[in-house]
Length: 392
Image 1 (tube, helix red, strand yellow):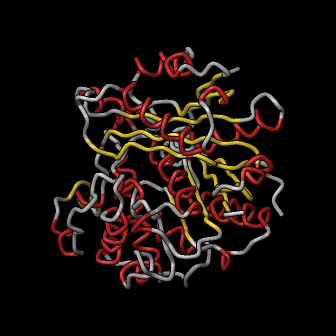
Image 2 (cartoon, rainbow, N blue to C red):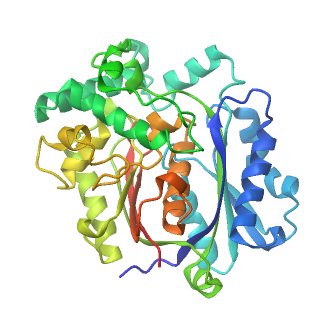
C-alpha cells in the first residue's frame, strides 16, 4: 500500500473565462482565500507557499518568484516560498515539493496556487510565446512547427495505426464538452454541446485537427491546501489522499522523441502508481486525464488495456466516458472543455480530483467515488506523471 503522507484538504477556484478587467492579484486573492477557508484553517497556519509558475506572464512571474504571495495575503506564519516550472506537470511537482516540506517538518500546511491571465497579453506576444514554448529552436521552430501542427501529425499517425475514424475522434470532444457543460468552473458551462457533425464542420486548423478539436486560451486560477495524511485523518473532514505515483521522462521535443518509448513509459508509470497504491485498473472510479488534445485520450485508454486495441474511439462515441457512463473520463473536460490556462489545466484537474473525492462536484459528481486516477504531462509531452488518489 502507499507510503505517501500527503492529503489535499482545501480547494479554491475562479471559473475559467475572459477577465481583462480583473487584476492577476485579484484572482490570486480569491482562489487562495477560498482554499484556506475550505481547509478550515487560519491563514497564519500556512507555513509554506509553493506556486505553479505562470506561463507567458513575465511580470507576475517575477513578483511571485521573489516571494510576494505570502506578503500580499498576510501569511504571518509562512516560513518559505518557491516557484515550480515543469509546464503542464508543474502542479504534480508542486505537490511533491509540498510533500517534502511536510515530511521534513518545515511546514504543517502548504498553499499551492496557480494563476493565468491570457486576455491582457497582446496577441502577437501570445503567438510568439506558444510558437517557442516546448518547440525545438533548431529543428521545429524555423520550419513553422506549432503545437497544433505537432498534435495533428500525432493524431494522423494514431488514426492510421488504430483505425480510429474522424467521427470517433470528434466524439472525444463531444464527451469532454458534456462534462464541461455541467461544470460551473468551465468556460463552456451551460453552453451547447457540439455534435460530432458540428465538430467536423468546424474549420480545419492542421489536418486532421478541426477548430473544435483545438484549445481556447482563457484566464483562470485555482489553489489547494495540503497537509500530512495523518493530520488530515485527525481532522475528520473530507480530503483527497495521495496513494501512489509513477513518472517517466521522454525528451524535450517531439522531433527527438521515440513514440514507442513514450507509449511504454505512459503505461509503466501508470501501473507503478497503481501498484504503489495497492490497486488495479478495475478499482479506479474516475480517470482524470490531462493531455490537452483529444488524441491522447483514446491512445491512453488503449495503452492501459481499458478496452481492446482500436476500440477506444467507440468507447467515446457510445457515451461510456461521458456523464453517466461506465468509465467516467476527464471530469473537467480537459483543456478542450475547460479552456486552456497554461499549466493551470493540470491544477484544475487536481482540484477536481479532490472535489470528486470530497463529494463537492455538484451535477458532475460521480456516485460512490473511492479512487481517482490522475495524470499530467509537461511541455509538448516531455514527461508523464501518473498518480492515484483516494477518499481515505
